[in-house]
Image (cartoon, rainbow, N blue to C red; front, side):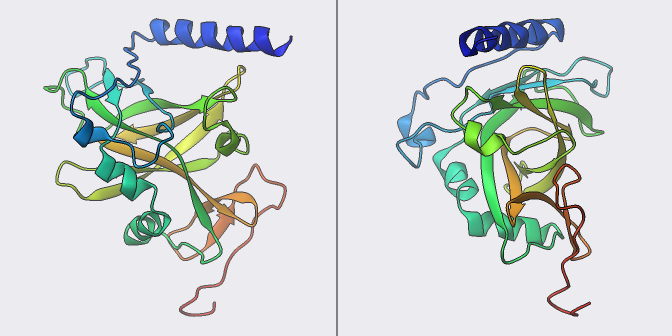
Length: 226
C-alpha cells in the first residue's frame, strides 16, 4: 500500500470510527478575539482536537466533548519545560535532572452538555495525531502501553496530573485513554530519559517503559542515595 492510499485509508477509518461512537469532533476554529487565543509562537498549536467518551455520566448518558485552542497564557505554561516539571513534582512524581518533557498536544476541552455530571469519572479517548500530523516526530517513539501525562487545569486554575495509556491503531493513529472527572485545558506530555519514554514513579524511582529495549532501571533517590 503506497503512502497516498495509506493516508486516505487512515482518514476514512478515523471518520467511520468517530461516527460509530456517536461522537462530535470539532476542529479548532479561529477565535473571534485574537487577544484571547493568540499562539505564543508563529507555528500552529499541536494536536489533539479530537476526544470522545467510552463511559457514561452520573445519569448514564453518553459524554460528548468539544475542543478548541487553549489560551495564549495556558499555551505559554505548557511550553515551559521548567513549569511542567514543577507540576509533575508538585503532584508527587520524581523527575530526574537528566530527563526532558515533550509536549505532544494540547486543547481546551468542554462538555457539549455542561449540565452533565462526570465527577465520578468518565473514560475518555483522545487522539494525539498520526504520522501525517504536525507532531508526528514527537509521537513516533510511543508504543502500546506507554504512559503519557495529562496536565489538566482545573476550574480553580490549579493543575492536576493524570496518567494516560497509549495505544496505536492499525492506521498509525496515536490514541490516549484516561479517566477524567472534569474538562478544561489539557496538555499531553511524554517524559524522556536516555532516549527512552519513561514512567515516573512517585517513590523517587524512574522505570523505563516496558516497550523499550532497555528493560527496567531504577534511579537512586537524590535525597537518600538509596
